[in-house]
Length: 142
Image 1 (cartoon, rainbow, N blue to C red):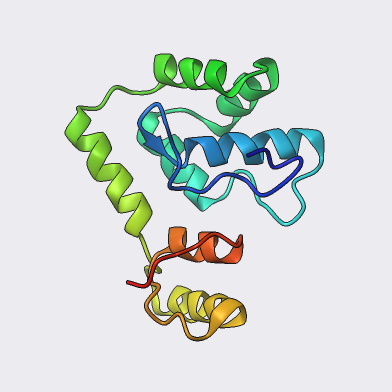
Image 2 (spheres, helix red, strand yellow):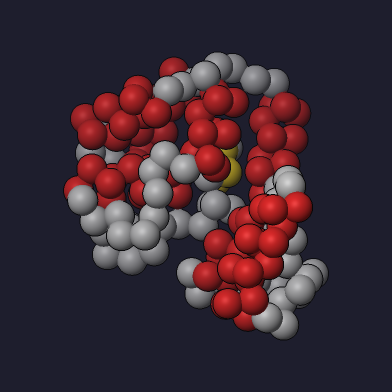
């Protein structure tokens, strides 16, 4: 899915084994095109992926700007990223996809956003689920 014509891909969509990478590419391309709307690039979730891989937002933006396809960006990303054992990358993906608010203030903010979308979904605790719900994806009851 392309943010220029629709929502960015779900954080759950993996590219080269990384959760959130495809979404970050979508948001970066939209920012470069001036069509990001309410989406933020780089956002705190983007920063987490960049920090884990040792890539800066400036490096990533330049690579996306210079590379026409997602597959080519993904190949650049893998060549450039800090290498982690598979088990560490899998743990990072799980953490990213289950991460919820880390402070009482962020919990209040999370609940405000969730309730504005669907107040009955008190089962949701992860930012990834909230994004999917907000963007109209089916989020199974937990």
